Amino acid sequence: MQRIMLKSKLHRVRVTRSELHYEGSCAIDEDLLDAADIREYQQIDIYNVTNGERFTTYAIRAQRGSGVISVNGAAAHKADPGDILIIATYAMYSELELQKFQPQLVYVDENNRIVSQRQHIPAQAA
Image (tube, rainbow, N blue to C red):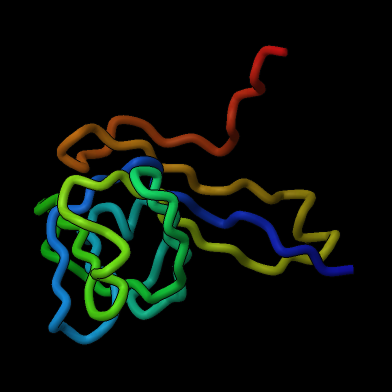
């Protein structure tokens, strides 16, 4: 059996730009791409915490250390500067691969600088 699992997540990044007349994609600071093991042109799912929009696009590289999260093309209608996003990737794993599976979870501050990285989401109290 194969299972589709969360591979990586950039949690609560802030949109720094929204470029309607740019080829569709999402430009992401290269430090964040590396931390979350997201490759340029890889499919990403974006969940806009601010307005509830959910959409799929692909990642492109923004300048390392810039903190840039730029939502481009038609997707620019779904996110404005200052919006808070969760950017996620998924992958298919076999039962054998799942024995060593750990997602890459990246948490940032209000300037999209990495503050922590984990491989699990803490359990919530009932």
